[in-house]
Length: 214
Image: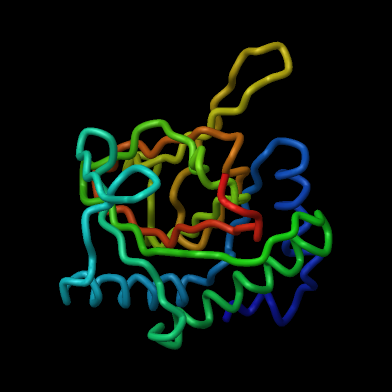
């Protein structure tokens, strides 16, 4: 996919993300996808949405309750069996990332799941934690943005809430820049998506362990 994979080793690409996850609970990697790849995936997202394949996102472990006051995004889960070539290439890249994380962090990741997420103008997702109390398999949350020419004035920031040792808390803000990957601990870091003045697109998912439901 991205030309950087031909020129750089996995260590040089992914090590800053791993360091961030181990020290802060999160890591950010710009240019995980090239501008051309961002445009191709965004085009595929829009085509699937126009075809009526997206649904309003729900909340809770069973994903059956739609609460617009909590989250307003529309989503479509990716299925490797029916994925388009550009989607398959993205998932292959994620598989490479999973392999490297397992080799360096010994997290025992065995699976992943991803969906497209489209936030229409003005929508948001209130502060929450990605891991369900009844399912501990989600280990790392991963977001890869598919936006073009995003500006700070467009809003739509991802806010990560980082607990400090003294019991206080600090907030890290990340703009949804096209091609940027954000990865963080699903069970530790609460986060929030702020409203934007334009449509906000991403591929969002979780790297999962093979542990049992709890």
